[in-house]
Image 1 (cartoon, rainbow, N blue to C red):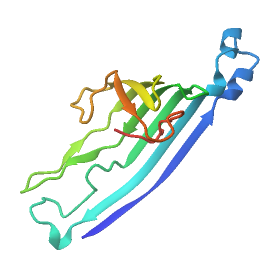
Image 2 (image 1 turned 60 degrees about the vertical axis):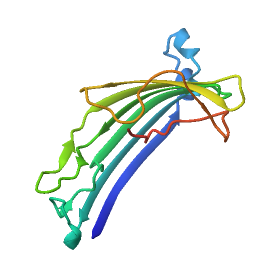
Image 3 (image 1 turned 30 degrees about the vertical axis):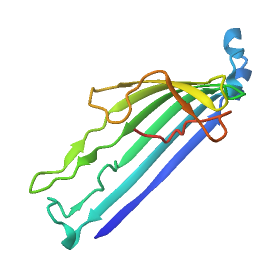
Length: 175
């Protein structure tokens, strides 16, 4: 069995503090907390392949891309982070390329998940108890599909054993 996974990833994360200094902005826009607003973007291009050779077993294809690995993944986010870490809000756009969701067996073909656009919003706030945060999230997709993992919702409280004063969401995160 041989595996191959090659690619390139580009990532940018930038404070928008300089936006508030633009003289042509209306007064209310200049007063926004631009120093606490960040833009992030991430793009990865990946070529993957698995060659099962003699270990093919019941799998239909001896050579195929790795299951769950898209050829590309792209994200863009705009985030607000309170200077003391009490509140964080993130709007995240995500898109990924076609990927195998189920490997074909016994002559059945591989099942591919098709690309779609997704928009996520997350709001987190530090609760008055040491290390506790509440997180609310919502998402919208360009097409409706069954989503695995936790359902979006509000009121998910969690406790961090690390530094709970500031958390950030990676622009490269995917679902």
